[in-house]
Length: 128
Image 1 (cartoon, rainbow, N blue to C red):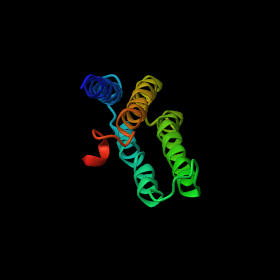
Image 2 (image 1 turned 135 degrees about the vertical axis):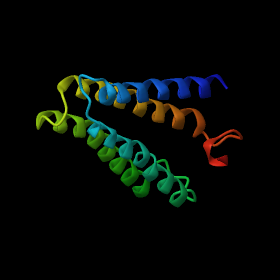
Image 3 (image 1 turned 120 degrees about the horizontal axis):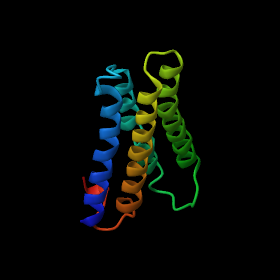
């Protein structure tokens, strides 16, 4: 229960950084909210690989490695989008810093979720 509370608290902190990067009057541009798409896309390759490679007991499989590759591409894109937006002056660099801080917290929260609940025991995300 403590892990779930810690994960939800860290997720709230990450989203707060993202919202501050958008909603502060000095920044006032909501383009950085497009990183929410990457937050939703990030776990999908892992879910697909988990279902497809469920039958094999091998430590590594091509499907799992491909899922890691796609997940890495999604995470890098989420960090690259605010930098590109700041570079073309669509957002300010301060907003970019807040969004990057939010990205780091959110992706660490997603990683923590899979480390805590992905063990395959009786209480796991697979039941949800």
